[in-house]
Amino acid sequence: MKFTDFNLKDTIQQAVTDAGFTEPSPVQKDAIPLVLEGHDLVAQAQTGTGKTAAFGLPIMSMMKADGSVEGLVIVPTRELAMQVSDELFRFGAKSGLKTATVYGGTPYGRQIDRIKQASIVVATPGRLQDLLMSGKIKINPSFVVLDEADEMLDMGFLDEIKNIFTFLPKERQTLLFSATMPNSIRKLAEQILKSPKTVSITKSEKTNTKITQLYYVVQERERDDALVRLIDYKNPKKCIIFCRMKKEVDRLVAHMTAQGFKVSGLHGDMEQKQREVTIRAFKSGGIDIFIATDVAARGLDVNDVTHVFNYHIPFDSESYVHRIGRTGRAGKSGEAITLVSPNELRTIKRIEKDVGTKMTTQVIPTRMEVQNNRSDELIAKIAETKVTDKAVELVKTLQHDLDIVTIAHLLASMIQSENSVKGKDTIGLGLEEIELLIERAMQNRGNGGGGRNRGGYRGGNRNGGGGRNRSRNGSGGGSGGGNRNSRSGGGDRNGRSGGGRDSRNGGQGSRG
Ligand code: ADP
Ligand code: MG
Image: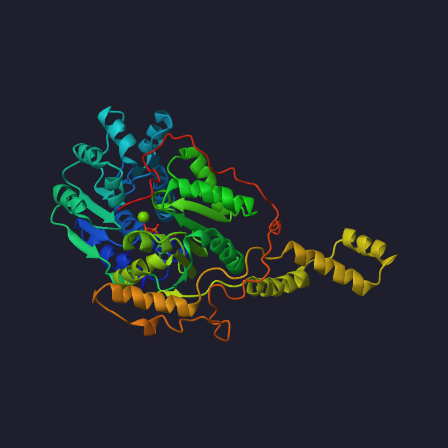
């Protein structure tokens, strides 16, 4: 199926083509025709599946661009408001559809002016309610969208939403989009939608097959070392590390910074401004590693995240799916890596079952393995490096005393030592041990379903050659303390900080 099959307005179709979208996503396939037919709609699909375009394209295709506010999109956070607004603007610009973004914490004046010129208003519930109740704006949108409805309810916006609807025209098309569909959402839908159609993207379609899912089994106390080793090994361009609690975020930010990584924390205690600055830095590459709680990372749309790390496995499958969906976006591939303790193997099994995909277990690479990886990278890098005048001079000077091969050896040793991998040689459990533990965990469950299907995790895809089934206190080898100055650039821990204003989207870890 192609986008052209929807018969969207020409200017909208052109924008879709310009955006490089070729194939509609499952939720788009189902939702767009229903919206175009004029139905109210309840749609459920995982984050990152293109819900914005699923409602945006059809409603914009039906708009007249007559200068009035024809569409209202209500979203939970300021960030999402900006994100959705950008996406809609991109699709609507050619059709003369302007968007206005409305959220709290900024002056009213300019927002009100913008609304007066806009065809589409994208707003957070609090500020929108203010504007409507105070009579500062009057709008009659034909299309009203509740986006990320589950999150709005999680954040306690139910009353605001109900109140907002008392200001909206009865004649309207109402669409509700949500990643999950708890009862509270169904109830809300009954109150504000008229005989809605439903679209629900089922589980098998839900998980993105372009995401490789791995897990590593480590002892509790090895988590930090394991994380650093894996990041050293995978060398992610951009990654997000998920924690359960804010204080874990803070601790890890400090730890990773001390290790020389460019990291920043993201949690609900940050002020909105700071949050945006941080996210922008992450998008533009000033920060490579984000450490975040589930709540803080909701809706975060960064397209080139190569790796997601779960420092702890999340409590529920929904969070797991949501977390790993931060990578493998927009058709790219990604890797999701979960650290579990032996006690958490059961959680892995449960999530595998809920989500309907297998995760592969691997052994954490040894120092040597990382080192070898780096040598390959170094060789490639050296070959690519441009010779500078300064370097030529330097070598000339050195040649007074040394022959050229010695100089090369010395320089290579210098780079090598700057790049040496620190930490103990082996971290985490070996494959045999993991298999045994899995077997035991599954047996302990009584006959709790699916018993011993270990064939699946065996063999996995541990490439890297000849079965290294190391046991825990095996080689152990001369671990090296020392400071990893390899990454240079050090301490840019600006992004984070306390300033606890907006506790709304707070990163209070534990969701039962
Ligand atoms: P959701 O609201 O479901 O979390 P978004 O609407 O934010 O997802 O879309 C996620 C990303 O995927 C965005 O960058 C968007 O531009 C992109 N995208 C959406 N639909 C398509 C498509 N059909 N083809 C390619 N990219 C798409
Ligand atoms: Mg969305």
